[in-house]
Length: 163
Image (cartoon, rainbow, N blue to C red; front, side):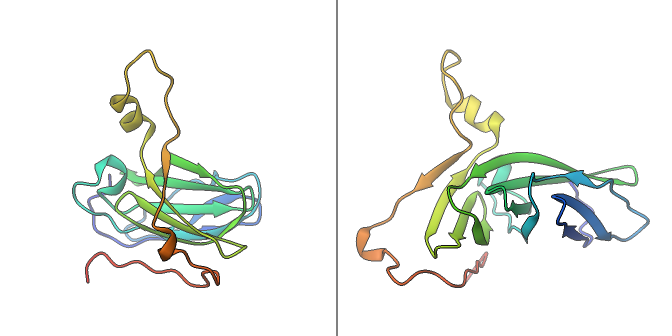
């Protein structure tokens, strides 16, 4: 994990790649192929203590027209920034809004539907299950009361670490 506390700016491209636009102290990064379609959304999550490996620190979250949301770990080795895909949520409809606090990921798809997931790394999921069972997906869809349903469609989404 990066402990430098320095800010960086990432970019998503039409060819599905992620790149580093700005970083202090001569840090660099090789472009990575993140999505099979264009990158449509990037988000920096807010880490929260005691939210497992995935949610305890800030992460880069990317979304593409391939309907996949990837949660990336950011590390610094020597003078190179590395992104490692820690978890992926596959959606039925392309997400247009993303927000994440700890390991809770909120998505709004192009049809205005809000979905929330508790996310895990593959390693965290494997630790929770007996070894003879196959590993379950790294995201669990969260449900809420029907009276809390959003009938008119969600058009904006934001998160806050503390209120």
